[in-house]
Length: 144
Image 1: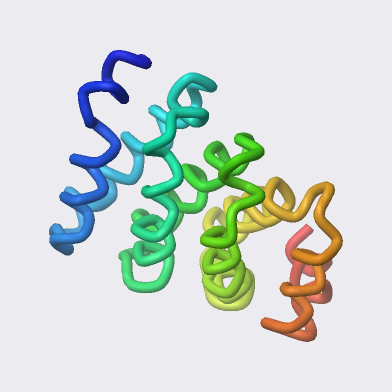
Image 2: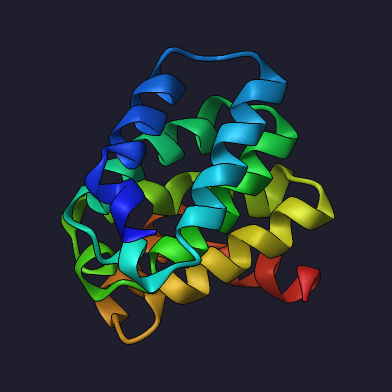
């Protein structure tokens, strides 16, 4: 897997997502990223951090299945401390919280999982959720 990261797979998939592919292709690409990020070697690769912004864009603008896959990919990616502690991950909070209010049940569960992974061991980020949506905790409780 590390060989794929070294060969530039993450950069290539990120660039491809930036071209706003059709729904099925966007979904397949975000799902592939999720599969790649299930590997600790890939999550810890220096290029993994560059994928966060594009996955956030999919959360904001993608189709339902793509948003689900993007949330699952972010959940895996947030296992890496260097990613979870980076400033760019703050951009993921708002669209993940919005999915809690507007998404289908499957998307909501994926968003909760990603938020829990992102916010664990980081009280200041948890406060950012309150800034985004005051009733985010209520929404989470309803879903759970």
